[in-house]
Length: 431
Image (cartoon, rainbow, N blue to C red; front, side, top):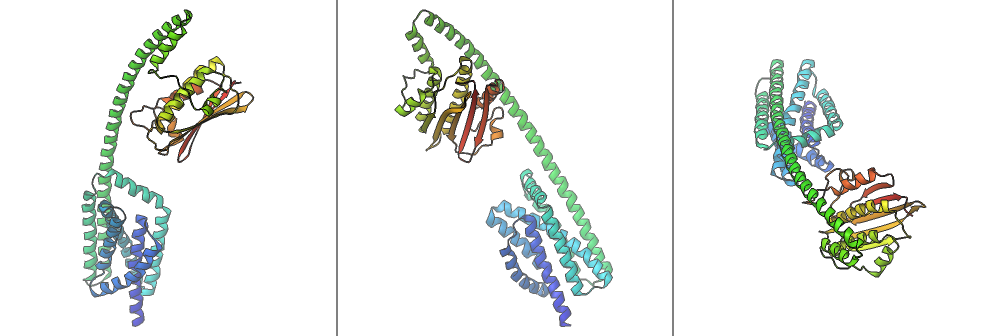
C-alpha cells in the first residue's frame, strides 16, 4: 500500500516540477539553478497540495513567474510573464487530462502514470526547443503591438481562473470515467475560446499598428517631399549665384586682378584667413602636386581641428591628378571630410586619419578614417538620405556613390567597426 502511495506522490510531485520547467522554457529564462530550487520547493508544494489543494502548486508557479519578471525588468514584464504562465499551465493541464482519460480507460497504475507523464513532458520540451525562436519572436511581437497589457491580462485571468475552477471541481467529485472525460472536454472548450479571443485581440492590435505605421509613413513622406522641395529651390538659387560669381571671377582673372579674385573667394568662404597647418602636415600635403586638392584638404583639416579632434595625415608618395579627375576628387574629398567633421563634432577625444598612397603604378588609394560614438551598418550608410546626425539629410554619401558609379576611374569601399569608420577611394589614372 505504501508503495502505491509513494508512486502516486512521485507522480504528482513530478507534475509540479514539469509544469515549472515548461513555463520557464516557454518564457525563455530557464536556468539549472532554478530547477534545483524547484526540485526542493516542489516537495513542500506537493505536501501542501495533499493537505489543502493541488491548486496551490499552480498558483505558486504563477506567483514565481510574476516575481521573476518584476525582478528582472519591470512591472509590465512581470504582468506579461504572468500572462504567458496563465496560458501555458491550462494548456499543459488539458493535454495532461487527455492522458488521464487514457490511463483511466486502460486502468493503469501509478508507475505507468509516471512513465507516460514523463514522456508527455519530454515531448513538450522537445517541441518548445524546436520552435524556440518562433515562440520568442511571437512573444516579442505580441509585446510590441499591444498598447496595454491589461486587456490581455484580464482575458488570461478569466481563462486561468476557469481552469482552476475545473481543477478544484475534479478534486471534490466522485471520480469516474465520465467525470474525467467531461472536464477534459471543458478544458478543450475554454482553451479554444481563449485561443480565438487572443487571436482576434492581437489581430485587431496588429491591424491598428499597421494603420498607424502607414499613416506615419505617409506623413513622413509628405514632410520629406516638402523638405526636398525647399532644398531644391535653395540649390537652384545657389546655382545662379555661383554662376554669376564665376563669371565675375573670370573677368577679374582675365584682367590679371588675382588679388581681387582671391578676396572674393575668401569672402565666399566666410572670410577664412590664410591657413597654415603644422609642419609635418604641410610636408605631407606638399607631396600632392595639385594646389587645389591641397587647399581642399587643408581647409577641412582646419575645421576638423576646430571641433577638437586629433588629426593625422600621411601621404607616402608624390601624387599627381588629371584636371578631369581633380574636379570630381575635390567634391568627394569635401564630402568625406565634411561627414568626418560632423561625426567628430560631439566626441570628446575624436580621432581623424587621412592617408594617400600608391596601390599600384596607375592607382592611388585615399583612406579617410574617423572615430564614431555609435555603431553604424555599412549597408545602411550607403542608402539614400542616411545620416546618423540630427538635422543632417545625408545626401553626401549618395552624391559620392553617384560620382563613383558614373566613372570607371573610381572605386569606393567602406568598412566599419565598433569605434571607427574607414572609407577607401581607389583612383585609377592618377600618377
